[in-house]
Image (tube, rainbow, N blue to C red; front, side, top):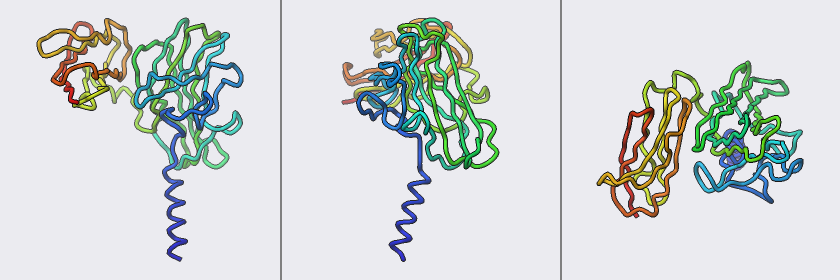
Length: 273
């Protein structure tokens, strides 16, 4: 009886921790992300593996080809996109880079089910390019019961999608709605860099409350500029992350600055190997 009970508990636990399949797009087979269906069977090359990862080593790039934008959706076929998701959640969060050539954009949709009935949805869309990773939220609404399955689709939009347009997506998760106005600070915010100390990659994360021209630079303690990471780039309200390769720098303390519309904010990071 104890063995049966243990097996049952393990089964229930496995179900209860069901999550987004391959949420960081680290796992690929034959050019396609595991756990997802993509458009490569329709237009080859519209979904590809990217080494420009938000975290880890891989991300998913949705590209334009022949006027068609790439897409991915959860599931193993076009007709079976739902995965087991026990319980409601506030938002689907993730990170993206967008290169919009002529109005192309990212469009994220989330659909929930309770049994065979629809149980709320959420979406996110933007056509504003960002050269560094920006966080998004597809905030949910309309839930009337307890969700048991969820479907996610992400598309590079455009009619047509011009050559050179792409969106890179990475690190999907369920969490709070970060797009909500109440969740955005009233001033520029620099979060502690991580890891700190760092030996290879150190991540700089900052948030801006209103659109502005942003520059990000890295200095040594003598004030000598080592690298310009962004130079007067127009960015919209939101939370951004820039991975910095510090493996070529000597051990020591460094200073990074984020300048928004002429006002500069700074923090220290350390390199230790």
